[in-house]
Image 1 (spheres, rainbow, N blue to C red):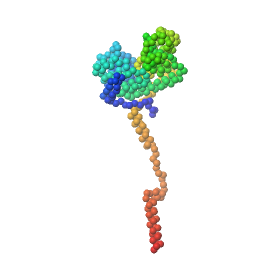
Image 2: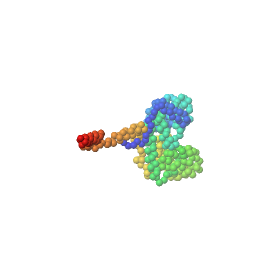
Image 3: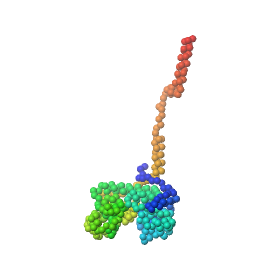
Length: 351
């Protein structure tokens, strides 16, 4: 049997965890009804096999299979407290973008777990593992993370072979761009490019002069043809060469395992077409995980099997007469008989 890609701790309830606000969350049993007020949490629930537990999603989770059957809990901005309460959730999952909604939901008597901002694959892995533990989907979470990591490793191999890493930029409009320490910066890096705005953390608004000086060679966009002809991008190398790579918006803006896999493969295939082929993609079916309990049990069985396989040492067969001599105490008897005979002979000699 092949070695598993990862191991995991089986889920246990009750479970206690502290969220990004310092709130201690306690769940006595696996939640049957989960409402997600951010699309990344919904995507994660789908990915770890918890979609049937979900009763409410935001409007931006519409692309997930079956999401249209869930209650839409979005308001004009953020989540609607009334609609979330109406879903009667055992647990509400609130990603970082939903920070303003957390307290009103708690004041309404709901159990809410608020996540910190996820800016890299490690953050996404921790977030996925946490959602797995809170919802009783630990195996699915471990498998999703192992799948994500396997694809990141595969793409790192591609980018390592590239002669050059193009200078890329993700514009959002009105001078806003994705800078360093962001999920999008991580996606660009894994895909085999360098974010020219990396020195600016977060999502800064830069003036035209700075954007021109950054001079990206390629624009990362979710809608083709929007920025290349706009100032100041039209005067950059990307604008002059009409170079852009396109990826679906949900994969760039929703930090979750599938987002990382889909976004990085989509971008890498466009950034390095000479190196990328479909064999780089690691299918989910290729991933296997094992609980630490099963791993320990397997190791114990293997050790016991090794002991049973060891041949016991057995003495070689010996002739019957030799066996008699080797009988415990026989030497003493022989010596005693010899002594008696000698005594009798001595007595006879004396007589």
